[in-house]
Image (cartoon, rainbow, N blue to C red; front, side, top):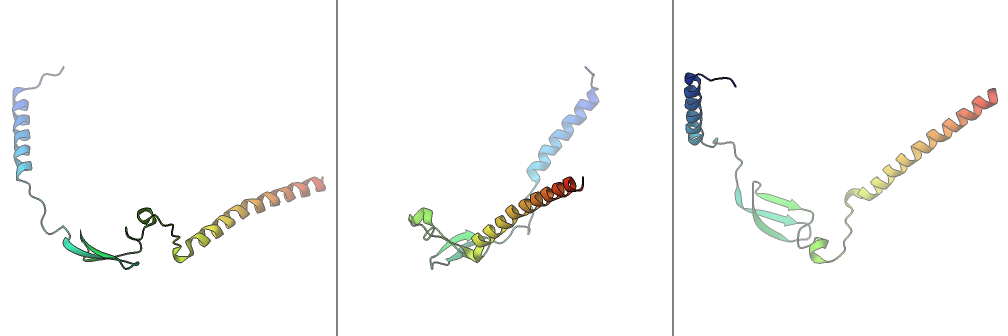
Length: 116
């Protein structure tokens, strides 16, 4: 084990104690936090509105606890902007591409065999 000089130990203790003093004196930075609105108005598409605390003065929702199927017990299908159709179309394109490549590879093999 390396022996430390007494001066090194004293300097280290002084640095630690001054760091503790500095950490107590640190204050949160000013003017970097957004304004907090305690009475922010929330409006849902279903017509429900209520107030909450937020950094935005007004919030618009597509679905809230008053119309969400989990809370109401009603099944409700929401398809905004045809997302289901877009997904199905995208899946159809992905599945069709490998088949075309496989068929092209088979045709390639047949042509090579015929040439021999």
